[in-house]
Length: 370
Ligand code: PLP
Image (cartoon, rainbow, N blue to C red; front, side, top):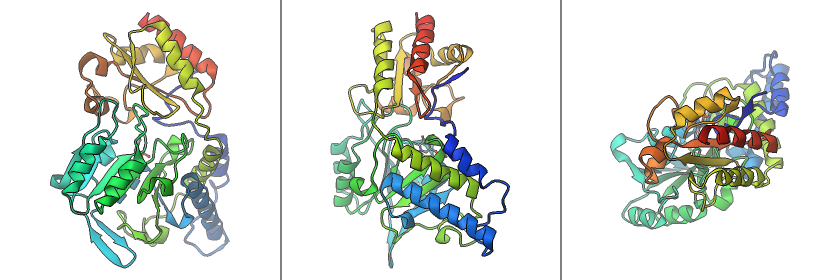
């Protein structure tokens, strides 16, 4: 039996999501058709819209389905936005330097208008620097993730939001990793828009969502064509995937507990094995499912192979950028270079992880790091 500890890369499909998907597969559910089959597809999408909306405390009208977190982020990062009948233009985009590559790329902003916000040694956006930078900007567009995929570090979104709105700016929060792992409420955050991805919460891959705090916010469609998703995202909806997303969101929402027992067990175990283990950002608020650690002199690549041969799936830094040899941009932005950054291993637990998985992981760690 393999042990899967890489939920931040992708989480196994929850049985309830699989069931919801199977109920759709094999049926011709084109939600734009007005016949019975079409109406059934439409009903499934609207049910999922309510389930996803409940996960982040928003009106279902504010939810637009996309093909994943990457498409959602690329759509949202748009210099042209509409607020009711008012059109607004945001010239500059400010993103934190630890964002996922699909945000770091700047979406639809011109590259010369893309700016990076500094983070401290824990990977938290420097609020003083943010205030100083935005002080001289007119209507800045800011994008900061709720929690980091590599370290699990949680950003002070409420405070960031205040600073951004005082500067007459607009705030996007990439909540792809935070959703389902901690309580997130778009109104408490006062984020203008958030983005989500199904496969990080036990839904299927290839489906995500844009969540607008005010349904009156207009974001120009990235994919133009038919009038699906109220014109915000063209293309026949993947009804099965959307239904799976909805079911996963509902179950994830019911099970958010901030329970960090597995994380504590893992980190206490690592510290018992050797005081040379460094757990990145362990002094600050992190997702209860993520631990990123390293030991000087041990390369992550070799460790990953040893874990894999022992039947354990973990990741080095971000799985989205795996294959690239080099320190992760997140650890670099936090000031880690060299051996320590190259040794970073990420363990991320999820809905089906149990204590025995952690103990097996620690046993293999003892053998490898010895
Ligand atoms: N944003 C963050 C923080 C992520 O971790 C990821 C994926 O790892 C994405 C966006 C992209 O989401 P998707 O895989 O659905 O395109």
